[in-house]
Image (cartoon, rainbow, N blue to C red; front, side, top):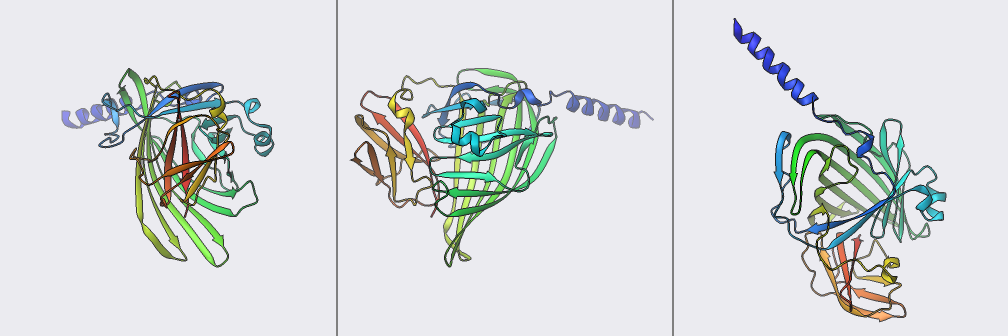
Length: 348
């Protein structure tokens, strides 16, 4: 006779435990103005681990890598041309030369556009809801969106994007990073797919990307402490697959412990073009200082062999070894030891 009562009590306790986890509300959404450093780590062997309540995620052995600067910008801090294109933006997130614009629309925190030196993405139909303004433990959001990517400031071709995304609050516990331990950490897992279609004459190129990203942050903080991402990209041309699918992994965590920093003078205004690149050449405009070394790396942190560089006026031209479609990083080390990290995208 006690068994049904015991089972009922266990069910009640489990439901109370789940509902007791702190919800992710507006305090966890990016808020201007702030800037902080992050570390790009070697992703080899790093996995998100299980979800659940009361867990400890131990990432104390993450390796030190290149520095990445992330900034949260208010509408007033955005360039005038960006404000004109996205007047409803409430916050911009800048990572190197990529600027993403967001606004709270109803109950959702929405991506409304992305600007790079050579492209502009505008969400056109269906909201691109990155996550609800409030989500409770075990909560899940499924979303679809469409967008246009204009290349070359509108003078180049237009890429049509269709995407689907699922966001789930699936963990709450303690996070251990190389230099600090954080409690009351919420974990969000985002899975999604995008399909980019480019039509040039009789040639239709389709790039499909499937992504899984796991982020960890204190429930009432807007700073992401750790991001683990894996994406697989495949390309087809007129319905025929081009090459083999490429899987890329990345790990980025909060904080920077190296004495080598991002240059704070002229190199902060560097512009990388074309971006996206065709995989054969990329230019770094606005740099005339001393070059100690230039490297090209894939998203796993592996150096790409065969890249070379030369000067032209106040810029550098980097010859690439016919890179395949995907994301890469160019590192520019100056003579004084400072380093600039610039992401590039290759679309072939």
